[in-house]
Length: 248
Length: 317
Ligand SMILES: Nc1ncnc2c1ncn2[C@@H]1O[C@H](COP(=O)(O)OP(=O)(O)O)[C@@H](O)[C@H]1O
Ligand SMILES: [Mg+2]
Image (cartoon, rainbow over all chains, first blue to last red; front, top):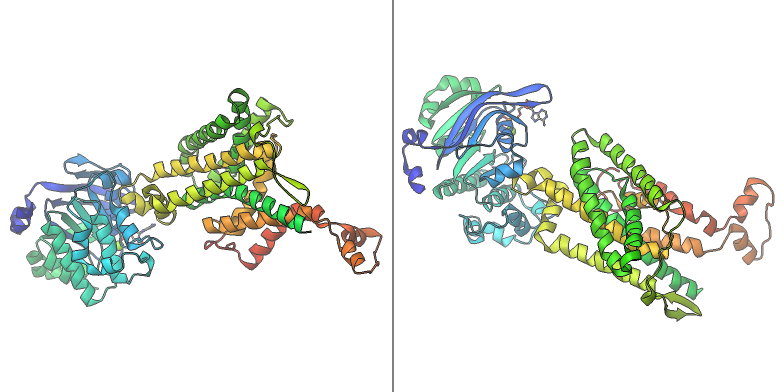
């Protein structure tokens, strides 16, 4: 699996797609939020979705999870998953870390992590020891209620909680939002580590630098549609796209 | 006086624990689904009638186990095929659904068992005085009721805090969507909680039936008190429901046994200034026992004024 990571970006783009989204539409009430979003994530890839606030990045992830009713095609490991309930999507191996983190505040760090496990499925990629090696702070605070952790610790906890379910693809929504530069570096390191274990990553980000550094490919969204698709090098070179769709 | 305190405390705690058997399920259901199950007391009544019916053929003990299982099963089916479908249309239809269900259950019970009390009796092995304080016999059956409710309370606590399902329930109380997106079948957990919650209400019915009166109006009598308990405790708070159950159990029991009026208090200290006529005279001579049934509602109003979220709740009632 880790061979995929070593592939050059161009080759990764043609790797067998783990997640394929085609012409995805989603609505909140009558407002048409996603207007035909298409993209793919290959096995072992880190792919980022960029865009200004409100363009529909979070809605895209929610529609894939089935938390918002999706219209269009979503295939995961070659099987159609649009219309499945969120728990069924998760059980297929899709992990999701929401923007609002959704720590269970009254439960301890240990209990939060335990809830990430899917039950009846042992022997996944991640053990508690792995998690604690990556982020020792969680072990120190293992019996602390999740609600009293710092923002950075909570972010780490949500990512680790999802990893305990051993996803093949993890979707992480703005993990570096509101974190100190030091914590941002830790999160970036963590994402690298996740991919190194052969887990694909779909990252939603605001911070261009992080996304450029980590991703093999990027998509830029604007007004509920994909407006750019390419490699970090291509996006760096395309000043017009950055000015129109990313810079504030 | 000491006799009265001891007996009333025992009765009050017993009544409180019975209330909690019902309030705990009601609270869990409310926390998870955001819907106040108006039919909760009806499941308590079903428990009593099923317990009675089953005990007629097999004796009390099988009824004690079988009735809650059957009622819990009905509860789970109601959630799965009733509430879950209504849920899509919002909270008001859900509330109306449980309201209607309460009427349906009452009508059905009346059709099958009639309006008069049925002859649901304390089993012979428990029909003896457990001990005697100051010449008053305390029935063994009441101690048995107390033991059952305490045992269930402890079991519930253990399941909620020590098991994986308990953990999933706790997390789903605050973040049902997130729990689902971690791969847990939350609707199934809802069904389970509804089934267990209504089953617990039925346990209360089975054990209370022989001690109280098993009659088609018993849900109507208990339902309002149950709502007082969960609102006073704080909607959605189990600890609050526990505290409020005991509080209301004790308050009501003591109120009923206190045969005191303003007039009698004045007389006791040697004043005999009774305004004999009109409303004031009536109020003067009313005893606490007579206003006993109102006290829980008075408490409800006072708590809501002082603390709209209830004693231990943290969401708006
Ligand atoms: N729960 C909701 N109800 C109604 N509108 C929403 C809801 N969540 C998001 N929106 C709207 O949908 C659009 C896309 O939101 P979102 O996907 O969160 O954007 P992003 O994650 O790219 O910032 C925004 O205009 C937002 O206001
Ligand atoms: Mg967002």
